[in-house]
Length: 455
Image (cartoon, rainbow, N blue to C red; front, side, top):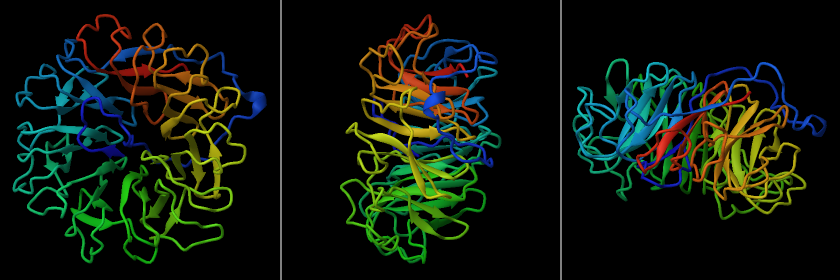
């Protein structure tokens, strides 16, 4: 799930790394006796590589950030203000690129079907599992014919055919001029989920609220998903969508009070919006963020579904999501949508709670590894940089590894907004302003990196 605009320096609160649809078992959690253990054999050699460079290795002459990694681990999509990453960048605006980690090739993808770069800012990319499709936000007016609404829209570019399409660009406008709010892409790139105030995207949209929609990129059809199980439209705004890799389940937050029946312990919505999950196959909508008493719990605006759609991962401040949550800050939780249970995930290697907030959690395809950002300083030994870092936690062994580190493993002097993994959980993309992570980084601005992990 992504925020709109890809604004330089903005905290990235949304975004989905497209995964692959696999059959996964119960989310493995590390028992206390096994905490901190790591296999001595078969471990990869960790390494950090800068991605925001041209094919010949020339470093970018402008800020790069907001990376997302394809599930197969080969392609990184990112935004950049640099003008020297490829010969086609002549528009003077922030653009969206894809880097092939195998060949080093860099492609400009925020383009029209004939390859013309967008005539305004583009950002916030999402990439399909195989790297073929890239969704992005843009306020450009020349990416598809007839885009006269004067609003920011969401686009999907097919890197194989060169085709660029949009479910929102055209002459239709939202009543408030806000354009597209957030979006996410399914693993195969065929389903795009997004938020919009537009009342003309589907018949019967009369609530005058921000709704969540899913667009079939192949068929060109759009469906509203922020609805109750009987199809009743939400009576308040819905936002921050996430989609499972197979495109079946969609998670979103909502202020609405009529999406599900009020069950035992159900109380008025909290200041932050609860998390809901809608199943496209069955039409069922259910709450995914609940306390131990069954009351709805508000979540931060970075919820995600696991690639297989079984787990809803969210960050919440509430202390009653699980028993004995005593750290008084935002933690990451996973709701098992099959068993109806919730677990706290953002812990140290020995199972202790983090001493700072954690957010933007993403699970690997086997649901074993959790990737996230955190201000906690006790998740790994020697965390003294005072920055928001990226981490990965092995939920089977309890091992925690920091992601935004240099080629020598040294900690970063800068924050990161992102810890975006591939499906296998062996690679993670992140952004940083630290010039000491790799040799030769002298451009004095933010860059995109990929970390090859130990496990």
